[in-house]
Length: 264
Image 1 (cartoon, helix red, strand yellow):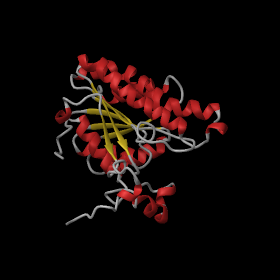
Image 2 (cartoon, helix red, strand yellow; image 1 turned 180 degrees about the vertical axis):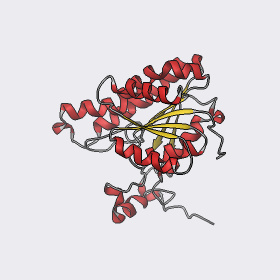
Image 3 (cartoon, rainbow, N blue to C red; image 1 turned 30 degrees about the horizontal axis):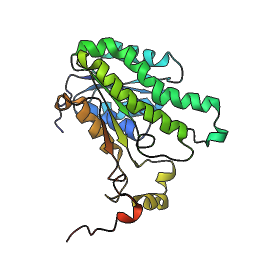
Image 4 (tube, rainbow, N blue to C red; image 1 turned 60 degrees about the horizontal axis):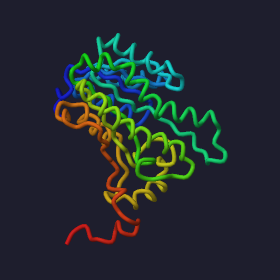
């Protein structure tokens, strides 16, 4: 990737506390963007920003609250004020309090829908004046294969939210195309994290045997897809989602992964 691929762009990235978020901030900054890194825990955002600034790159940390109706606008306004405008908004923040349907609390349902789905509407609405002014505005979302492509017990609410995200991407892309704004998403599969069940080596090996490329994704795999979608090279791409899952969705059954030799 060219170091000036996003030169002069001003970007807001939400949800930068771990894994994918920090990777997006780093790669955007390395490609020349000025980045506002917004996170529910401000100290976590500051850690990411400090590491970026130590490389001589441009980033600032901002607080974020996406559970209520006004937090998205506050983050957008703060980012635009400190960066002098916005060209790119990346909604990476997400969350899923695991619960079966019969025990799902109303508060958990509302939180999941607010952070994953409703925030898309709120962020776009708040950022629209700056994205229009940019002339090459980009709105990007971290979606998921869970919901749009596959289902997972205990994550019906999350899957429904991410399915809604993909519908939002298509509708918003059509509505905003006349303003020169593109709207796209990335759907990660299993991505390595430093915490959670995938941090356990045994669990990781168990999952990896069902991935054709044989390994979990890395946060950078998602970040580089975002860099492409944010760049001029993706100017003619809108209303789309890019699946980044190592081929996990390709086999009709897990047995098929190792059925064909990798070489003659």
